[in-house]
Image 1: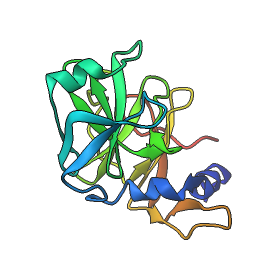
Image 2: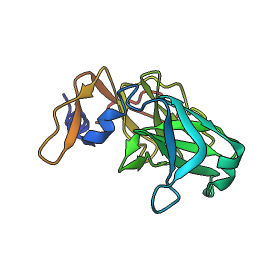
Image 3: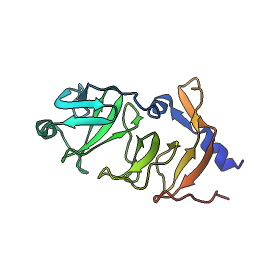
Image 4: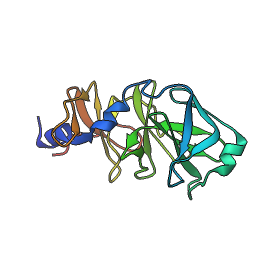
Amino acid sequence: MTLARLRIVSWPVAALLSLALLPGSASAGDACHRHDTADFAVLEGCQQTTPGALVISADALAQLSFDEDGLASLRAGDQQYYVRRDGRYLPVINYDNGPDYFQEGLTRSVVNGRLGYYDTQLQPAFSARFSWGWPFENGVAAVCENCHPGKPDADGHTSMIGGQHFRIDRQGKRLPEPR
């Protein structure tokens, strides 16, 4: 195992992030809570119908504050979402008590049990196909296949262990190991 691979394997992941791998961690019938208010107010006219699925009325969309990319963020149950002005939405992983950040224009979402990367239009950069993946940095992301969360350390950080760890480019193509 190369030194670079050891660094990827032991890279800590917040314990909360591992919950994003569990489908159904959010429940149906949960009200949407706004991230654009100090008290995370309930957004009337928005409800999670099934884990990963929202119903958002036009009136609810009109109440949201959208950023320069045309996105607002919501939480329903344990699930975080990005929402566009036209009502399109994407369930994204939890990170830092909120929705995953966009790094280099991409955020992460687990769809049908597979992690993928999505742009600010909430379109996939490429097919969702990894067990886990870290944010892009300098055009490269570390991902793993057939890995799983290990035991949290004393600080609550969890490493993704097992499986095969490798790096990908922004098209989702596997990169050679660094020398």
